[in-house]
Image (spheres, rainbow, N blue to C red):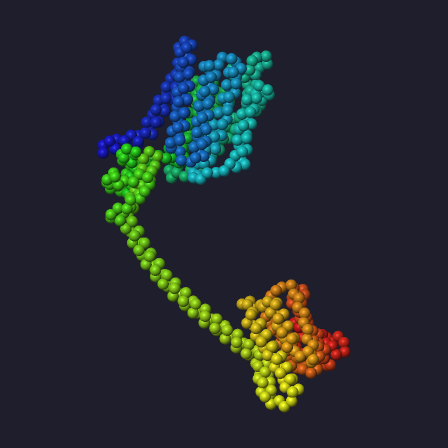
Amino acid sequence: MQEEKSEEFMMKKDPKISWFAAILAVLSAMLCRQVDTGNLFLDKLSVIVRSFIYIGLFTGWGFYLKRRIIHKRALFYLELTAGCMVFWFLIRTLKYSVFYDIVLMRWCWYLYYVPFILIPGLSFSTARFFGKVGEEKIRTQDKFFWGTAIVLIGLVLTNDIHQLIFTFPAGKPFSDADNSYGILFPLIMFWIGGCMLLTIFILIRRCRIPERKMLYLPLVPVGCIFLWCILNMIRAPFLKVFAGDMTAFICLFTAITFECCVQCGLIQTNVRYPELFDRCTGISMELINKENKICYVSGDGFPDFPEEILPTTGQTVYLKNGNKLNSMPVNGGYVYWTEDSARLHQLKKELLEVQEELYERNKLLHAEYKKESERKRIEEKNRLYDLMQFQTADQMQKLSMYMKQIGNVKNAEEYESLMENIIVTGTYLKRRNNLVLTADENGKIPELEIYLALKEFCSSIPSNRLQGQFYIHTQTSWLPLWKAVKYLDVLEYMISCYERKLSWFFIRIVETEKQVRATISIRIPEKPEQLLKKYPDIYVEQEEEGEWFLRLQ
């Protein structure tokens, strides 16, 4: 137990140890910079040692970030920042400790500005992801942003051609020991200053820390970098004494800025497990390493289980008391937690009972619905029968009268006339009722049904007494029921009224102006006054002597 507490104590102290080691390394590097023995070998050695201290420091910082940062895109930009710092110090070491040729030294000086331009841009790009959880796609403004950085780097690397960034005296070799700033050099400083200002703005805007005072912690190193850039541009004389190493100053304070963001919580990190487990209540959980040593335990504790029943590949073990022991492999060990499944079993039992009850209720409701549907169907059928009986009461009475008269006929001619009337009236009743029964819920019937109704009705009329013809052509296959019934009613009434006077009729049903219209041409000696009295909305026009044109609405 004492060993576990000691291990936990060391893990809690790990960040402080890291900070102490980093400060010690920086102090050692600063001490090496003050070495001036007059011995060329010792002086060069101190420069190389100082460079490798910084290279090791920023390399270790890059690996340390990988262990802590959660956000993948932010981690990517931070690792690029650490890589730029290491590259910067390598170029600086080559310039001052390896190369002595003036051309190679000048090119190392130009290469200084590659990380000098990229690091502020990477700082801004990293700040964009503060407070965000998901990833973002590369957008158009990102391409423009990094395109600008590449153009600035290209201007620096091609300075020998145009001298727009740095200018040199005529007749002297190009060197950073004797140069002036060109007309485009302020663009580089504006880029660096703009990225810093945007970084500060995003730090303030994206801050979600309850203690707002902590917000100013990352702003201090950012402000120092901004101030250093201004003093360097105006060539302040005291800057060489206190912060003359541009590479070390920019890299150190950039790293300090991001570490302050980590400490403030602006950058999500994968640390502070002891506090997380201590405050985790309501669940029994523990984290162990590969050697089965307990690293962290939740605030509610974790029961002791025999080592042989602890699962190690993510299985679930059901215990005798109804609880479940769950496991999940993590990097470097396993995490275990228990769940009280007794309540879940009780809920499952209750849900099964409710499911069975709902199933029985659903069966009952289905039976009631089926019975109600059958009742509604019968009611609708009776309603249609009553409606048909009411609308065709006169024809039914007429048919009944014909049937009574046929038993009292004395000659064949009268018998034949009654039979013809029975056939015409019966065909009308059959087809009219069929139209009503075949109509859908919207009160429409297929055009084919009207065609068949008119065909059978016209065929039932004795050809020796009356010639009946029809024509149907519409753009739609469905017609309103009330129109079809009306057309049939008009024909039946017309034939019954003018039984001997009517010699020929022709009904035409077509679609004009997106409306179905019907016209009837008849041959009758006088104007059909009785028909107009029954249907006053019919338009009548005489075409020739004894021929009339009827237009139905």
